[in-house]
Length: 297
Image 1 (cartoon, rainbow, N blue to C red):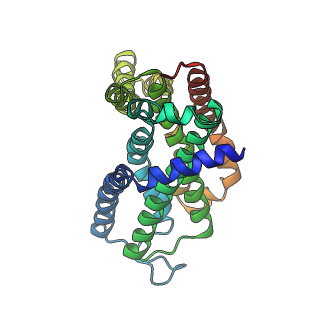
Image 2 (image 1 turned 120 degrees about the vertical axis):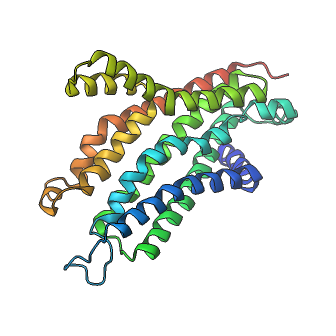
C-alpha cells in the first residue's frame, strides 16, 4: 500500500505541475463560463424580481440549482477532456520516453504502478473539478447575488462528486487505450475519437434513428428509442444523474420539490451511478490485466 501512494504522489505531482493540466483547466473553465454568462444575460433580460422570502435577491429562488442543471449538458460533453488529456499517454508516454523500463527495473510490482497511476489520476481529476466548480459557483454567487440554500449546496456538491466518477470513466478508457497502443500519438487520436463518439456521435445517431422509427410524431416511441441507444454512452447516465439531482429541483412551484428529497433523487439516480461505477471498474481491470501481462522492453 505504501508503494502505491509513493507512485501516486509522484504521478500526481507531475500531473498538476504540467502545462497540460493548466491548459485543460483553462479550456474547460472557459467552456463552462460561456453558457453561464448566456444564462445570466437571459435572466437579466427577463426582468427577474426578488422573491419575498429572500430579501434583496435579484434572481429567482433555486436559480443556482436551475443553472447547474442547464450547464449539465455542457459539463457532460466537455468534462471528459480533462481525463482524456491526462490518460491518453498514461502508459504509452512512459514507454516512449523510456521511463517505464527504468521504473520496472526498480523493486516495485507492476500492479503498484498501475494502481498508483489511477489513484493519482483520481486526485488530479478531483482537483481540477473542484477548482472549476468552486470557480463557477463562486462567480455565480457574486454576480447573481444569490446565496445557495443548504439543499442547493448539497445537490450541487453531490452532482460534482459524481462528475468525478464520470470523468474517471473516460480516464479509464484513455488509460486502457494507452496501455494497448504503444505510440502516444495514436493513443491520443483514439482517445479523443472515443470521447467524440460517446459525447456527440451516439446522441446524434440516437436522435436520427429515433426520428426514423417514430415517424408520425409518436413522442413516447421516439424517447424510448432515443434513450435506449443513447444509454450506450456514459454521457447519458451522467446526464440522468444531473436530471435526478438538479432537474427535478429546478422547475415548478416549491410544493413539488418537497416531494422529492435528496435521498429520493439519489435512489432514482442509483442505476445510472451503478452503470458508471461498473464501466469505470471494468476499464480499470482491463488496463490492470493488460499492463501486468505486457512485456516491457
